[in-house]
Length: 367
Image (cartoon, rainbow, N blue to C red):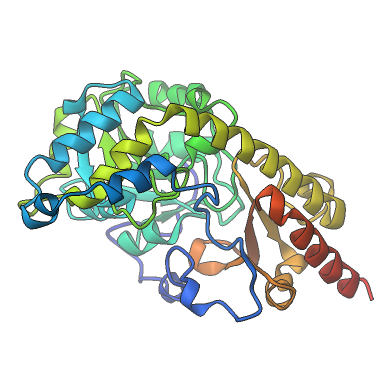
């Protein structure tokens, strides 16, 4: 089995887990020079007009009444969107709350978090880091942990590398484990990939599978704190509802999300635009810093709308901010051995400014 850096029952909490920037890239901390914020992974095309219309049409009754039925409205809308029965979904206040519900569940002592990983996972499970601190954990590590009967928590596509395992690859890992362990997959970025169905585990017939989904990133509705967890196993769904309040989600937040989930035309248009933006960003970055496959700093293999730049190029964050572009600095808090920056794709009308900023920073670095 691959070496583990810690587990849920031993080792001290690494202090750098909590030494990270605010989750989501708090815009209140951006320098006045910033004109384009590429530090957050929330799509710059959202929210859909249909979501805004749902907010404008909200009645006084929606605000005055307790949110009876809001959870059912969310699971029904997400069930239609994902093509699964609504009763197989658990509603929560975003992917983050669902991860913390996992941390408060009977499964928590068995959780392993392959690193690098999203800092929310590391904070919820501070002693659960597993594997080497490379850019993206190996599939073999996931398989090893499952066979050791661990609850393996991963993001797929991966934050921060942008890489992803296909559904077939993760399915093979589950089959090799022969029913041991539990795989928990956070698919918050799966809508950004070219063909989401090739990567999503939703609908896969594994009793030891739990999948988390959130509309925050792709739909550009991070302010609406809603999300769902899916599993065909009632016991896994029940594990997330051991400690819950009377009203898991807000009716005012569910209304725009339900509208967005049903807006197929906007989804198709936004997806196509994001694919083009992602390709443009990758081309710009590789032209300047080169792909890591060829000894450069830009992490290759990403399938998302953001890219990770590591090594010496990581010092570009403050210089880009001066040039008007905000990017996200990452490091040991994410489980990365070297500092890095994550850059989300700009919209078409922002490309000229971003290209000029990148060129100015690259020119300054070469002197």
